[in-house]
Length: 399
Image 1: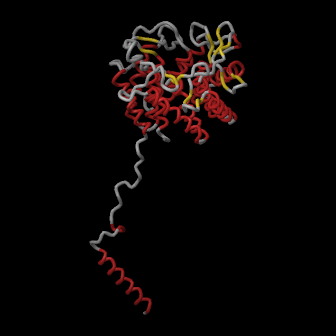
Image 2: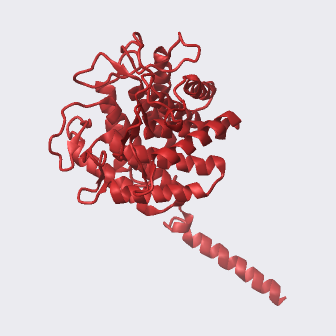
Image 3: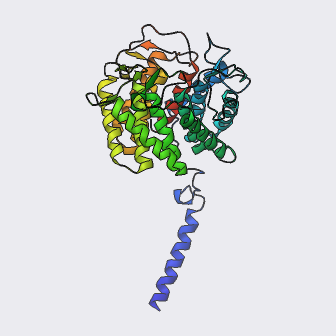
């Protein structure tokens, strides 16, 4: 009897409370907002990446879906690695979630077919053509083809459908030309020549080839790429690594003379190659090598007074692509080990380039200037725009 009374009393109390609450703005009775997830502010680096892309569309894009060299002296020419770099830039935008860049990325990829050497059974990209894709001929560069192969593998990573195998197959075709080009020989103990003129063997050429072979081995598991990667890595270690600085030198010429200057982008390329070696070969020692290389770069190639990476140890200027390459390497290293200091170097470098080389009105980037902005060039090269779009898009994920 007591339990029944208590229960009934509780029911009456609940009914009374519910009745009294009707019509009041009690938070418990209000529907939740449509989306209560905090909105993250748009990164200023993403804004700048988009502004750079707008400059590219207005000043460099042609009706053929390729890109002219610059806005001044070479408006009727196209360079292969400039166009590949723009594909790379658009792939970065897709990587961070903006699929609206896929059409321009794919269109430029298809336009570049006009630069492919169809008279050579092994193919390979020529370095130059007219804006309509005609006139491609002359010298072929190993670094151009290696970088392009890597670019296409980044596009392969971020795309789907029929375009995905097309990117992979063209990257494999780039590697096939490199392997069969005859540009690896026994002079200087191995190593790839820079181009078909066989005048020098640089670090950046072989570092890009190493990246391409490692990535292709990781995707295909074909031992051909692994074996070539190991050969190139051994040559770079034996011939180009300077144990005194912990960095890689520039090049050897055909007479065996060494150029000991140390370039920022050479070492950024090698840092990324080590990260791929760690990931693909499963050798954690290469993450430690990448970290040591980054520390050496920051000891020798970082100008602390201006918070920027210099072009090279003999030329302390700033360039968007070649100095900006270090920001990409530091971002990728941060993604591997989560050490925030690498990200801070990447950001500082981009900030300095924006201060010294970015035109405030057009949002284009000039090619070179001194560390304090003195002697700034007046030309705006397509490759510099592409690299600034790319590295700022990558940084926008974190800053």
